[in-house]
Length: 442
Image (cartoon, rainbow, N blue to C red; front, side, top):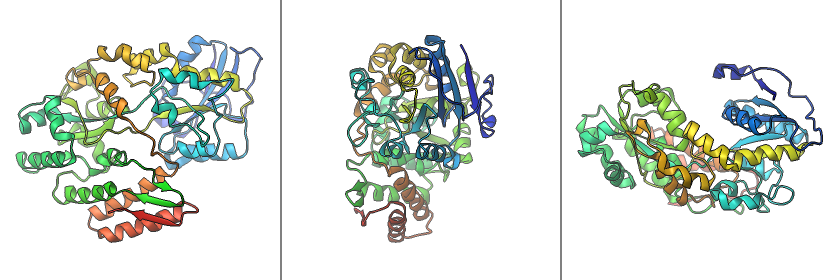
């Protein structure tokens, strides 16, 4: 068994201890003609695949893998993929895409369609969370990529604040306050009053953006028009009210103050999906939580957000120009559907997987110490059934970023509502080609 991993200099900061460095991007993938041996070149923007590739090589010890990670800060990874595919390069054989921007890769035909022979990915559908492969379908309805994970969302809250304000930390009772936007805002006022403004409902209103963006039923891009639903205008108005009334602490999602507020006990809730629990909240709120040594170990619960949503996710597909597609499919199919692997991955990492049979098999077995023993897997198993992705389009990332910029300016009082909406329209007309109008419903 041999694995060669190539890491960029930037990736060194990620401290991937124990990973070897060798090889080069320009090496040609080799194929011996033996279906279970040869070499694959794999690119990703995330190091998550590392442990998965180790597991894959336990099943296929004669498949050599050259794995390179290009973090996507400033769209470094996405630009590299675009340049590589436009040059019709055979390498990498396999590469990943993130939900926020992978529709552009699909629309551009970068990934090999997998629905038909010899892959027959449609035969896997009965065992997978439906929306996961569906999100990768191209304009002809063909599956182009798979994922090991489904990413329904939740609302993680501090039990100690719930007990102080509501008299209980019971997730069912807390959910009665968090599952509608009006009640959620009312809870924020109660927290502000109880703690005399020293604690907040949210670190920042931007935490609400993902469930807000998932409340729509139609795609933004409709023919040659972009149509923004009234729910996004409502989001803009709620954001301003929260900021002016100090219901939220003024920290943007992913900012240093946002991360800090996970640990300092000043914030009631963080609205995060499956991966947010293990990869964002736990390591920042209390890195030693699993050892039961941290101050707030067990001081968290999982409740229902104002709207069901899914957020993020990583898909893996085959380079349409690869000369090694048969071998590449073994890897994509293994990670995206193999039940033994996905059960291992779920138990090893707590990640919520995409294989329905595995979910049903293991969902009753989880008890998360960080959540006071609550079973997050059972919660997400119910939430994943509510996910609708029929409205997702290729320009969502740019449209939502442009909208978010104007929400911030309006919330800070730097623009009126009308000025913010007009600025958004101008920005979108500049970003998306061949559109004739931007409609904002109010």
